[in-house]
Amino acid sequence: WYVYVLLCADNSLYCGITTNLEKRLKQHNGDVKGGAKYTRGRRPCRFAYIKKAMNRSIASKLEYQFKH
Image (cartoon, rainbow, N blue to C red; front, side, top):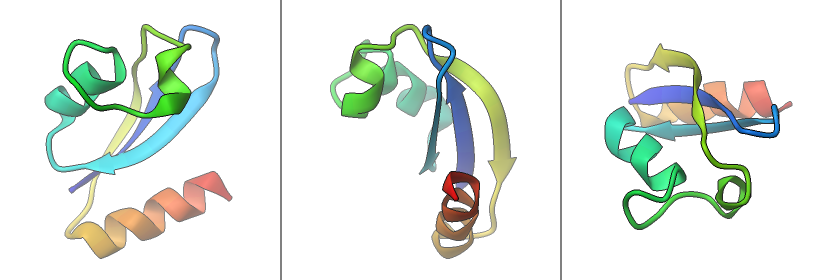
């Protein structure tokens, strides 16, 4: 699992978790179906930060900490 932070075209940040970074970025940028509603109007997005986590639980906790 990975925790990632995207830098969007409007200089805002978006945080999420995934097991497949390449696919998730393509989803956020509209190349593949999926992605967050937040990033749809803020494309293109690129990774600003990536951190590997041991499991989903730890990744979710790291994401929560970032958002707060």
